[in-house]
Each structure stands twice: as C-alpha cells, then as structure tokens.
Image (cartoon, rainbow over all chains, first blue to last red; front, side):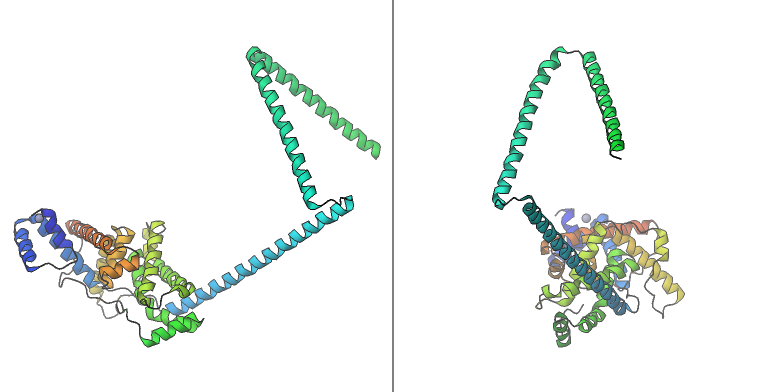
Length: 184
Length: 206
Ligand SMILES: [Zn+2]
C-alpha cells in the first residue's frame, strides 16, 4: 500500500477499522516519516487541548447595546437625509417644470408639447447632419492637400492663422472696451 | 457546544423578532463567549475579536427576520461570525498585526488561580497556537477552530461555512498536515514544548 494512504489514515477525521489500524501500526514501525507525522499531529492536538477559548472583556453585552444605539441613530439620520434629499429633488423638478410652462406661455408658444419636442429634435438632427457633411468635406480636402504641401508650408500656414487670430482677438477686446466707454 | 434551543431561548428569539431589544440582549449575553472565542481564534487579536463579535451580533439583529427558526441559533451566529472573520482576513486588514499593536492589545485575562510559572507557560502555548493557526488560510482556520474547539461534525462545519462535507474533510486533512509539519518545525527551533498529556480536545464552548 502507498505511503500516502497511511498518511491519509493518520490525518483523516474518520475512525479506522481494526484491520486498517493494524496495517497502520505495522507501517509506522517501519516508516520514520509517518512516525514523525503522527508525533506532529499528537503534539498539535495536545496543544489545542490545553487551551480553552478566551472570554470577552466584562461588559460585552452593555457595549453591544451602545453599539446598537449608535447604529440605530446613524440609520435614523441616514433615513432623514434621504427623505430631505428626495423632497428637495421633487421640489426642484416642480420648480423647473413650472418655469418651463411659464416661459412657454410668456413666449406665446401655444403648440402642443409633442410638437415642440419633435421640432427641437428635428432641428438638432438637421444641425448634426450639416456638421457631418462639413466634416466629410474637410477630410477629403485634408487628404488631397496633405500630399502636395510640404511640412514647412504647413508650419507657416498655422503660424499665420495664429497671428491673424491674435490680431482679431486684440481688435475685439479694444472694440468691447470702446463700446463700454461709449455706453458709460 | 450546546446547539439545542430551550424554550426560554425560543421565547427570546420570538420577542426579539417582534422588536424586543431586551430579549436580544439576553441572547447576546448567552452567546458572547462562543462568538468572541471564534473571532479570537480566527483573528488572533483581542480588540479585533471584540469588534468582530460586536459586528456579528449587530448583523444578526439586523437580519433576524431571515433567520430560520428550525435551525440552531448558535450555528447561525457562528456562521455569521466565521464569514465575517474570513472576509476581514481576506481583505488583509489584519494580515500583519505589528509587534507594538500586539503589546498594546488587550489580552484575555489568565485564570486568577494560575501561578506565575503556569501563566508564562500558558502565554507561550498561546503564542505557539497563534503561529500554528496563522499558517492556515482563513477558511481552513475556521474549519480547524470549529472542529477542535466547538466539537462540530464535518456536516455542521459544512453548513456553517457554506461548503460541502467532502470539501470540509479535504480542508481538514490538508490543514492537519500543515499544522503537524509546522509543529515539528517549531520543535526543531527549540520553542518551549507543550505538555503532551492526553490527545484530543473535548473543550466545549458553552
Ligand atoms: Zn510512511
């Protein structure tokens, strides 16, 4: 029989039959490794047997009640905060809704809600499709131009565009300050 | 440990389910020792064990409606405690307790009747046990603790730890081999030898 089988018998939690017990004892006589394992297991179990479970510090139940109190308090606070948050959200939705209705009435839009929504979506799609077309056009141009313009020329083109933008921004700033002075 | 529920305990459980905190406190008083003991053997630290035991009772209180009254309340509590400790160990929060922490941590009091020499021996044995259990994975450690200190059968351990019975048996086998090898290594390092009178463990949790 294999050495592993005897090790299993030594360490298994189940009881052995008389025949197995005799075979194990015969093997232990001859096998120092298994004898050592048996000594180790006996040592471990003897150690476990001498050490009882430790007791908690006195007053455990009282400390538990304090902990429960703290937990229940925190839970109450959490619930309260959740309710306040929910109320604020409902209030916000109501205010925004009223503001929209009021604005629509003020502007004189009497069309149905669905019409307004459909119109807005239609315009959004129109804008998006125009943007898409522009993007296509630019990508074709980019590919065509990219091949026969040298990198140096690209650099100077960008520098010129940058300078023009700076000039334009400067002019805009001056115009804004001038118009403010005039209005004062 | 005694897993039978007497009429008084059933009444406390029923009352606690109906919201009676006082009744649940009776249950805490009754089961504080086995729950704390399991947490202590799992975490090897008195303060961490106190926290884990408190948390176990809090979880039990919160989920009392889910408790199946046909099952043993003790087993249910130990299951919560074991899973909580396994989670803690896996998150490595307590994987390495520094020596300073160990020195400052509150330790369970030694029996007042013990002589100073006996107290030293007991402390050395606790240290030896601590080193042995630390070599096991969290789940194997729970299996070993429930088997040796709570006299649980493999079937009971399986239901406590949500494992199959054969998984418990193979974990127990592996853990015992590891423990035996560690113990032999400890002896080679000439650590103080434990008394070897009597083999086995009949200590009961309650
Ligand atoms: Zn052998």
